[in-house]
Length: 136
Image (cartoon, rainbow, N blue to C red; front, side):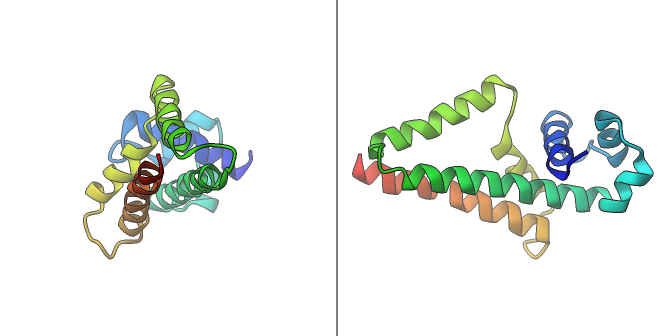
């Protein structure tokens, strides 16, 4: 099984069960992979959560960059594209932004790597709006 597949399944499970409830055992069961093999790559839940959030953050950043650099779309279309993407996520019972908020709450120490990663993504999200709204 590919790393991205494991992280994608872990993200879905985290969105459904929440950070506090999700365990490595649950992820192993979901992907039908032996727990001892899974722990070779992610020794604990925190390591998997960090990697999953980093993977999600990279996906969001790539999407955001592609959208902002797309010269074929007007500023208004770029702004609407964000809402279209969010609507699609919610329609598929996916709530990726909520994971970043939950991670900051679950790891309240601003010095914790998971808190820092999640906070960085939370701060990046609104930056799309002012630039596109000003130009719309």
